Length: 148
Ligand code: FES
Image (cartoon, rainbow, N blue to C red; front, side):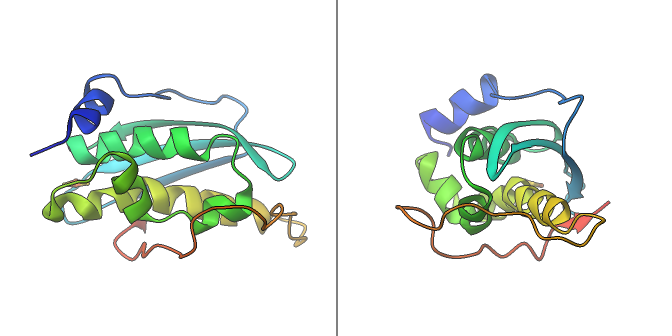
């Protein structure tokens, strides 16, 4: 059912934990299954310098949170906003069709965390970074994620 790489991320999830001085903290959940994710993002200029999370979720949600945080570390904010659920699933070697929606938990949290940060209280948008280079090209659907 799950690929070896998915199972590796489930058994040895990367980036579990808390960032004490995070620039953005976001909690998202899937109301249908009750799974939830608390994501911490640290930014350095226009780069995601660190990403950690705590999760209560199914194996697919754990694996995709692990892979998503691995992917976005070092990525510009602009590129991270373009990351899709499908790209994360592909990076894991694929997910069963019925588990694809689980990947939107982490990707949606990254997007929401960046948006919260860039629309900070002074109203000035942050620099999202260069748009050059190879990277994701479509925004994911995050409709199932609800801020808790
Ligand atoms: Fe809830 Fe996977 S079943 S995120």
